[in-house]
Each structure stands twice: as structure tokens, then as C-alpha cells.
Amino acid sequence: MLQRSFSEESGLTVLHLVQPVEGGVARVVTDLVAAQVRAGLRPVVACPPEGSLAPAAAAAGAEVRVWPAERAPGARLGREVTAAGRLVRACAPQVIHAHSAKAGLAGRLAVRGRVPTVFQPHAWSFEALEGRAADTAAAWERFGARWSDRILCVSESERRAGRRAGVTARWSVIHNGIDLDRFRPGDRSATASARAALPALAGVPAGAPLVVCVGRLSRQKGQDILLEAWRLTRTRGARLVLVGDGPSGAELRRTAPPGVLFAGFSRDVRPWLHAADLVVLPSRWEGMALAPLEAMACGTPVLLTDVAGARESLPPSHLPHCLVPPHDPRALAAALTALLADPVLRAELSRTARRHTRTAFDVSRTAGAVLRLYRELAAPSRPLTSRPTTRKCTER
Image 1 (cartoon, rainbow, N blue to C red):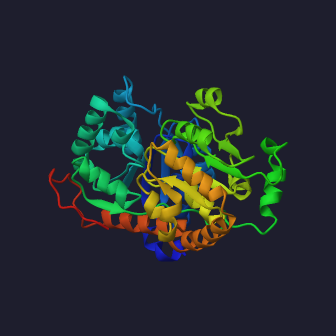
Image 2 (cartoon, helix red, strand yellow; image 1 turned 45 degrees about the vertical axis):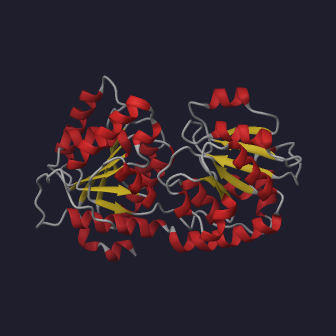
Image 3 (cartoon, rainbow, N blue to C red; image 1 turned 90 degrees about the vertical axis):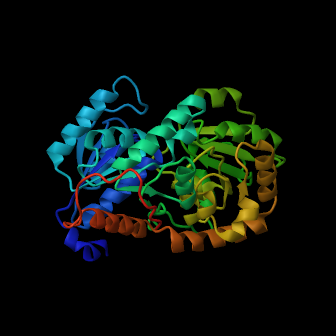
């Protein structure tokens, strides 16, 4: 479908400059480049060689170049900017798509508006910081916007956060999407089969309520808040499983209460989504998380904190039951207890979640919208010079 719709884009070179190379960002980039290959584009992914992105992008058909970049800004930034500039000259892209804060920083410094540039925050860097560091990050985003032909947000709430921070830009909002052929509901026996096939659940009683949290073990994803809430949850025999690894892993294991299991990194999370009675993501900040969309597509209800993208992810009927304030373990515990105690409600949430994701979050729709954005920016009549720093906000 994308190949027919965008055959006129054949030969367009898009350079994806990416850091980080794990988690949701890596999956978004991999899905995009797979669609772009099918559409006849030439996607090039420049990223550090570590992590899952480089092999996944290569398997999807992208050309992969090594860009040695650390996740956080530091003493190596000058070399990273220089390396990004060399990659741009070598690849000669018609469009540059910089993913997340570090790539957005280095890529825009290297190019400075000479090539049409899309910056996609994947959650704003200043939301991850505090005090002077947050102020500095926000100041950079305000300044760097002059070298963004478009800032691409994955939710309206992410765009609003940028505007509240004073970022003046041409905006596009394109929701994240998921592969609905890959993330599908199981049959009636899928839950039992999935639980039986997962070694981490050995010894867990078959009927025990199971809550699963999928995500990098990090401050952003809020598993520490979830562990605090779990101590307050009043559900006899329930188990909580944290699927993922990351910098907070050791501390979380040290402080976890009884009934919490650590499954480690999983390359395929679908068995966990099918095994769960409920998927919870207690994030401190997001753009629009993929794990809840994947869970709902599999027919598993979700419980989220009210951060960017959460309300836009959920069907309206889910908001009273499945959304709690961030940083509030008592509210999270109360919602967990209520949902685990009400299988009839969970069944209804499952049905509406499946319909909602299949209607609103198909990755082919996301990829098509991104391709149309590229076509607009790479149009031959478009001047390839940087624009004034003050621009009209175009909301899409």
C-alpha cells in the first residue's frame, strides 16, 4: 500500500540520526525504515553500533552507518557533531530525521538548516532534568528550533509541553503506531499457554493475578513508584513482573517487596502481554509510549500515569479506570487493587482496547504520514535555507 501511494518518492535519501539505540526509539525507527524501504526510499540509519537498532535496521533493509555518540551530552560532543557532518556529506540526504535529544543536538549543530531537517524529541529532554540542567536543555531546544524545518511530536500533549517551554516551531503531530499483524489478541487459551511457556513464572500458581510492567528499568519509567505502590496493593496472591533491564535494575531488585519478579530483557514481549491480567506503566514522562499500545492491541488492559501521550493512547471510556496522577503511589495502588478485583471490568476494557488500537494506531498509517512530511520538505520548489527564528505554529 505504501509503495503504491509513495512511488513518486523512489530514490529519496533520508538520513536517520539516532541515539539512543534501545527501547521505543529503536522500534519506532525500525518500523519507519522498513516502510520507507517498501516505498522505494533509501533510508540510512546512523547510530552507535551497540544495542538493538543497528542490526534491526539492517534487517529491515536500511543502510546502516556507525555514528559513535554517547547518550548524554559531554566532552565528546564536538567530535560527535563533526562525525555527523561527515555522514551528511557522505550520504547526501534530501531529508535528515534526528531522533531524540542527543541526535537532535548534534545533527542540528552539524547541519544548521542546510538540509531539510525533522527533529523528533521522543519526549523532551528538559522533562528528564531538574533545576539548572532543565533550564539549559529548554534553552537549547528554543534555540535549536531555528534549524528544524519541522518538529515532529508523537502526541498533542508532547507538542504542548514544547510550547509551554517556549519552543517556537513548525509542528507536526503524528501518533506512534504499532504493527497490528504482530501484536494481536490470543484465543481463550492464550493466557494459560503464555504463562506456561515463561520460565520466570515457574512456581507461580496458575490463577494468581499477574501484573506486568514492560520497559527500561530507569527513572523515566517509574518502576520505583510502582514498587512503592505494590506494597500498598490489596490483592491476595498477586504477582508483579518487571520485564526489561537498565540502569535502575540493581536498586529496584534490592528494594523490591515480596511478590515481585524480574524477568530481564525480552526481545519479544508478546508472551508477557498475553500472560498478563493487566499491564502497568507508571512513567514520570513520555512522548507516547509503545508498550501500552502493544498491550491493548493484544487485548490486555493497561494502567498508565497521566503523562504526555497517555490520554491520547486510551479510549475515552478507560480514563476513569486506567489513568492516575504521576508520582502518586497511593493512587496507583488503589487503581491496581480495583482493576485486579474486577474481572468483568477488565474484560470490557480488553474489548474496547482492541477496537481502539486497530482503529487509531496502525503503524502503516504513521509511516504514511511521515512519508508525506518528507515529501513536503523535500519538494524541489522549497528553499533550502534556514528560516527566521520566529515562525508561525503550524498544527497538524
